[in-house]
Image 1 (spheres, rainbow, N blue to C red):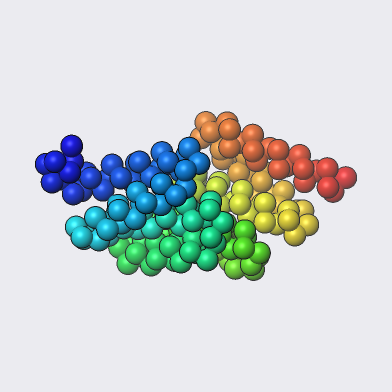
Image 2 (cartoon, rainbow, N blue to C red; image 1 turned 180 degrees about the vertical axis):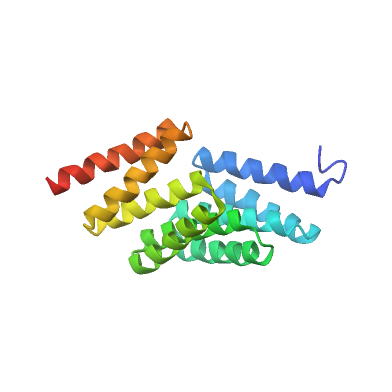
Length: 186
């Protein structure tokens, strides 16, 4: 319908949503195809915020496919645009995604750096959910390095923030990590 009436903005949004649906179903290849079309439309229409969002989606999709080099490239582009347009929430998401991608690639020092920056900005802007996400990812990273007190502190913060926000599934994930940490230190 959006193509029929030449509504490029909504066509891009629909493609983005289709990409999200494909990714949720595990069809990463189709997700990437939708995101690439979405990115082209966002570039053609000058929609910088849309470009940043779809670059993040492309980064996440390539991360799911195991192509961490491309995932990092897309997340870096996302971060650059988020900074350019002054989107602090977008910066937090891009920094956190970079942290996860670097953690998965084995570059734990860079992962820590990006996750710490994401957490700092999330707290500065009062975004409790993004802070909880960044803190939980930091907890996972720190637990992997046997830095138990720091991992525990981050996991506890996440569990509390998620529970207060009513996100019980995420709170449970944080509590499971807390349990794993307690088992390691006892």
